[in-house]
Length: 281
Image 1 (cartoon, rainbow, N blue to C red):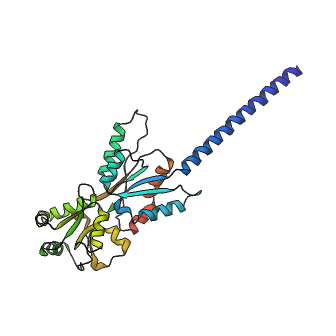
Image 2 (spheres, rainbow, N blue to C red; image 1 turned 135 degrees about the vertical axis):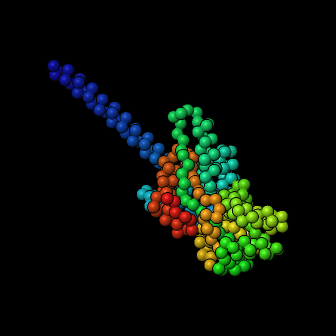
Image 3 (cartoon, rainbow, N blue to C red; image 1 turned 90 degrees about the vertical axis):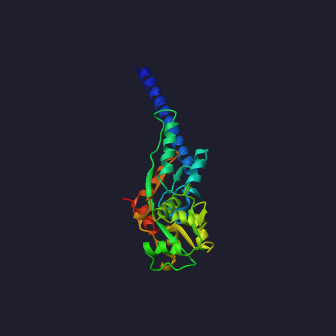
């Protein structure tokens, strides 16, 4: 009887030891997985107009994390160019576009190409709304209104006006739509007065350096440089197509989802508001 009890106890010890080893292995693997994700760089493809505000948001996000958040690498370009890079296989974790079209197309393509119905896919999310403004370092825009704006652009036959490429950049598309609504786009084009920039960042540089007389740029760019009131005129939001900016989580990393949530949080939205964007309702 005693011998039987001894054997049972030995079996119990062996069982507990095995369980302990399995639990330890699971904990070690979990720690390894966390360490691996922590060491990976979060890669963000961001529209050029975010180059002023996104670094501040990233710094606040990283400072808010304990332990510190992983490294974040950002590539800025036109939304269309970034979309082309992603569809060609560029390894980004998050796509922050300056419009809604490209994230929607990318999400649909990922869903269509999913190997199974269980494969994780993400939905696009709106993270901010941009504002369009006319900017000049050569001419005073103080006291401008919609009527005098059109008159100003049409009266100077030798002035140059830059907009971002409407095919690639949403700010350029909205700028073109505004000029078309005002029925002056065709005339300006015929007079060869519109200088097309690759993206909104380049459009701002053309105007900021005085290489062109006027530039349709992002209000956020002007907020960033603390432009004076006579240097810019903010267009009324109802006069051009809304510049709703959507993002898309591309990878399945926890960090990508977490950062996208931070962008839409009250803290993240405050940075956008302070930077010259419109609030997202």
